[in-house]
Image (cartoon, rainbow, N blue to C red; front, side):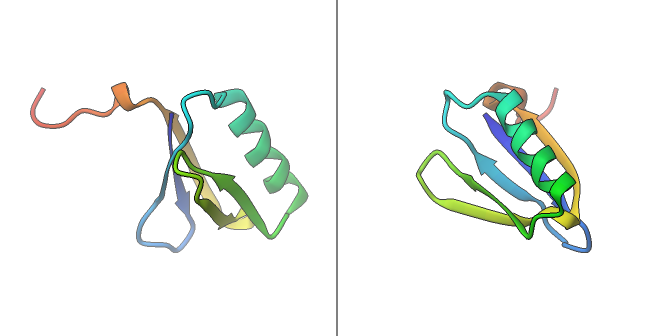
Length: 75
């Protein structure tokens, strides 16, 4: 599962490749809870075990998809 997170006033989005067993519902719940609580950073662990943090109060959008959703080249 791939997640792209837009951050307010940041020129690039944060891209996270999550483990295959990650549930989209769990990801949504984690981000929703952090944004609602106004927590400092939302921390997520990617497929390689790296910790990625982003500011909960600066989230502009979240896009959740799979690797199959990505297209390369012309359609």
